[in-house]
Image 1 (cartoon, one colour):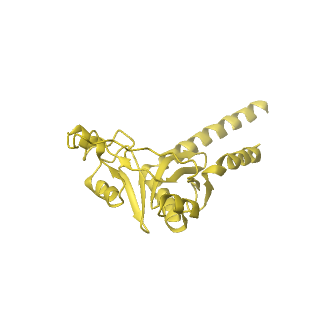
Image 2: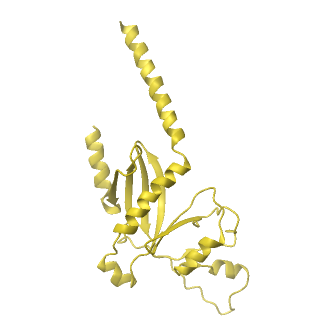
Image 3: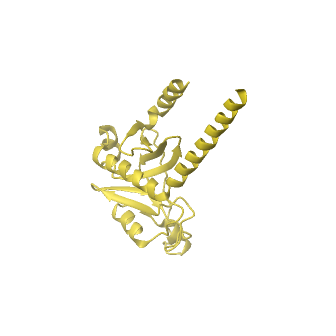
Length: 201
């Protein structure tokens, strides 16, 4: 009887492992991008810049960056934040090659909002540079400096701002139904995860 229980237990582990492996095969780059579209559509329709930030930055946020994307348990998890800095291109970031820096090589534009992210396979192209330039956030100072295209009296006054009051969102999107998702403001993430860990115990 005890041996039968052990055999059944081992079979369950093997079957679970096979199921998990099959799920991991299904989680391709394409499926991740489909889920990203859900997040983009929600942000494009529902994001509103607060009055505080309108006053501080002079205009609504219209550029957003995917800071991270991952698969955790039964969820796709995306962290997306409003962008308030220029995007700096280096001379190493060549058209036709995949950037090895954090320079974005993918974008989506919807409702006059630009969404940026980076993957490991897409070569950079002129289209994304034109788009960044149209939104006024492409900084090519480093390239011009490298190519000696700046005047001799040029002073580099660029500042990378860190504003902890600007919060983005974490999206937890269900693998089995990508229209089922939970959107958590960044500053509430710890409370949300603490609550989840209590529920799991």
